[in-house]
Length: 355
Image 1 (cartoon, rainbow, N blue to C red):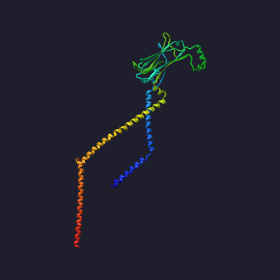
Image 2: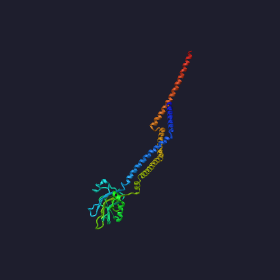
Image 3: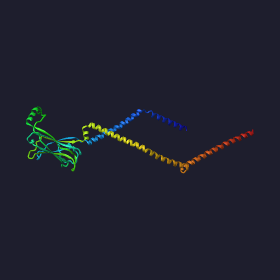
Image 4: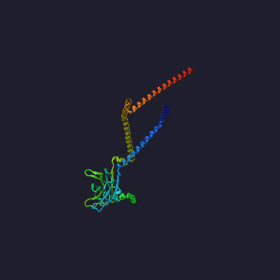
């Protein structure tokens, strides 16, 4: 009993010391730990949002918005013609496509994007180029079939000889240094506008891989003379692509912050759902546990009262045996005391008679 009381006193003193330690924890330490936990979680959320942002930019933005492909028309043909591939350089040999592509890999314009085709022609001043001519652009698919055809009429500006000589005199130093060139004119004009890569209504799946540019003179006249030519493929951007491409820093910060807010809302929703599950699911689980404990308690009480179980019978027999032993011990102790008292009295009486 003394040992049990000592242990209980030691446990009580230890519990009081633990309670004192808990109560003695400063509030600022708890605030600092909470702030650190929030910062760590928010750092991970922002990192994930930045990774998602980079993935979305890679999927949404095109590889480029403007491609310039120089070409030289082949004057050995009845009408000068040139083939301009709109593919990545690693699929070309000396700027030309030597074999047909089997898939859409390497296309400069992504599937579903809109693009324009502009032509830039440098023409010398000559009697041949004074005539009107046409430029035809054919969009060719991967299997070299014609997908779309567009034409544009071109005409050089007719300069007055007096104005031309006055210009030469005024800008003579620049012409001498080679900063300006005389005797040629550059035409820059659109031929194809807002063509959608990948599909055409009523045609099906079509992916443009190259352009075919043809110079068409008037009937009975010579084809135009060209110093140099280039095709410009301009990808049309949507509002989102325009914002991401032309404002990279602002769009990256804005989209990352928006994704971080969305992830925080999702995380908060998960936490609230877990808390609600514990709040509304806890009482039902406790009631089930209580019902099980009550049933077991009733069974044990019936066993103890009726003695139906072997454990109850054994316990009953143990109790009866211990009570019977106590009675025998009390009887024996009583008889022993009486005999001892009676014997002592007889010895005293005999000794008195002798005297």
